[in-house]
Amino acid sequence: MPRIRIPGLAARSRAWLLAALCVAAIGVDAQAQLVPPDADPLAPRTADPRNPPRLTQPGVTPLVPPLVFTPPPSGAGDTGFDATNARKAKAKENANAKPKPKSTDAIASTPAPLPISPYQKPPTNSANNSASNPAKSAYAMAPGDPPVDIGPIRRKPTKRKAHVETDDPYAPLGVKSGGFIFFPAIEFISGYNTNPEQVPGGKGAWLYTVAPEVLVQSDWSRHELKADLRGSYNGFSPDATPSLNRPYFSGKADGRVDVTHDTRIDLSARALVSTDNPGRQNLQADLAKLPIYVTTGGNVGLGQRFNRFDFSVKADAERTTYQQSKLTDGTMASNEDRNYNQFAGILRGGYELSPGVKPFAEVTADTRKHDLETDFSGYQRNSNGLTGTVGSTFELTRLLTGEVGIGYTQRKYADARLEPVQGLIGDASLIWTASALTTAKLTGKSSVGESTLPGVSGTLSRDIGLQVDHSFRRWLIGSVKLGFGYDDYVGFSREDKRFSAGLGLTYKLNRSAQIKGEFRQDWLRSNVTGVDY
Image 1 (cartoon, rainbow, N blue to C red):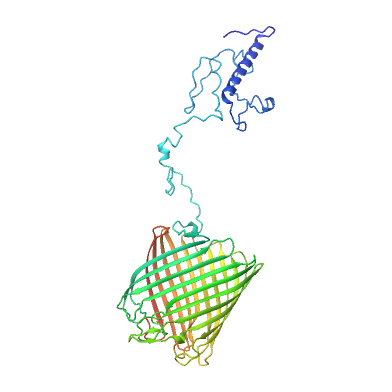
Image 2 (tube, rainbow, N blue to C red):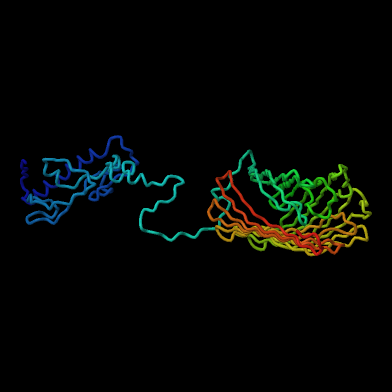
C-alpha cells in the first residue's frame, strides 16, 4: 500500500485521517451498490447510526455497513481502527449466512457482511421454505382435513357454545331466488303398523308415506313473509277395511308490512287437509274410506309499539267443509251438517320485561255458524266461545326460544240441551338448547272439537309432547319422544287418555340426504269398556 504523508501532522493524527478516508470510501461504494437509481423514494431505507438524518441531505438516506468495534490493541487509536494488523478472533459461522466472497483487499474483508437491501430479494433458504421442504408441505392442513397432532403439547379444549343453525355442517343451505330463500325437502317412509285402525284387536298392515315440504323465508330489509308448507300421503295394504289411505296437508303463511318503525300490518293465511283419526266417535259405521275435510282461513291485524309495550288487534275467519262418506255398501252419506264458518276477534298485549322475555295477555272471542241450523240428530250446533290466555315469549341467546301460555276457555251452544264446554287450556312451543349436543322441545296444544254424537256438546282435547335430541356425532342424532293426550267428551261420561313413546335415529349423509328410523308405541285407556287398544 502506498503511504500518504501530510506535512504538519503527527503519526497518530495521520493514522486517524487514513481511517476516515477508508471508511468514507467504503460508504460511498456501498451506497452506490445498494441504492438503485430507479428506487421508490417512498420505500423504507436503513439509516446510518453514525450519520443521523439531521446531518444528511434531504430525501437521501445513506446506507453504510455497520462497523465492528473491538477493544483497541496496544498502540492503536480509540476510534476502533486497528493499525497494528493484529490477527482477530475468528467469528462463528452461521449455517444460514451467505458465504463471503473471497477478496484480496484486507480493508474490504475486515468489516461484517453488508446488510440485505430492502430493494433486493432475500436469499432462498431451502431448509425453511415449505415449498421445497416435503416434510412441512406433507403435513400442511388441507381444507376440511382434521387437525394433525404434531407434538406432545396438549392444550385444554375451549368450552363449546350452544350450537345454532349456522354451526351445523349438515344443515341445508336452501335455494335463494330473488328476495326469497326456499328450503325444499321430500321424505319417503316405509314401515309396519300393528294396529292402524286404532281399535281393540285391530290387524296390522304395511304402510308407506311420501311427505314433501318446503319452507320459505323472505330476505328483505323491510317487511317479512314466511311460509311453512307440509304434506303427506299415507298408504296401507290394499286389504285393510275400511281403506285407511289418507292425505294430509298443512300450510301456513305469515306476513308483516312495516308501515312505520312502530306500526305494522299483520297478515296470515292457513289451510289444512286431513281426515278424522281412525277409531274416533265422529265417524259413521260401515265406512269404506275415511272422509276428507278441508279447513281454510286467515286473519288481518294491526300492531302498534309504544316503547316496550306492544298491542295488536286481529280479525280472523275460517271455513271447514267435509266431503261425503263412502259406505261399504256403495252408498254415500252426507256430512253437510258438519260444515261451518268461524269468525273471531283477537286482542293481544305484550310488554318486553327484558331482552328476550316478553310476557303477554290475549283474549279471543269467536262464533261458529253451521250450514244447517239443526244437525241430523236434531241439535243446534251453533256456538259462541271466549278464551283468555297469559304467558310469555322467550328468546334468551338462542338457548331458550319459543312461547308458553296457559288460560281458560268456555263455549256455549245455541241448543240448551248441550252443556257448555269449559276448562283450563295450555299452549306451548318451547325449544331449550341444553348443551351443544342436546336439545329439548316442549309442545302443547288445546282445542275444542265439534261432535256429531247426540247429547255430546263437543270434545275438549289437551295434548303435550316432549322430544329430546342428542347428537352422538354431528351426523348421528338420537331422539326420544314422549306424549300425553286427554279427551273429555262433554255431555257424556267418557274420558280418554292417550300415551305415546318413541325412539328415533337420524343419520345425516350430507346437507341434502338423511336416513331415519323410528319405533313408536301408542296406547289408549278409557273409562268406557271395549275401546282400549
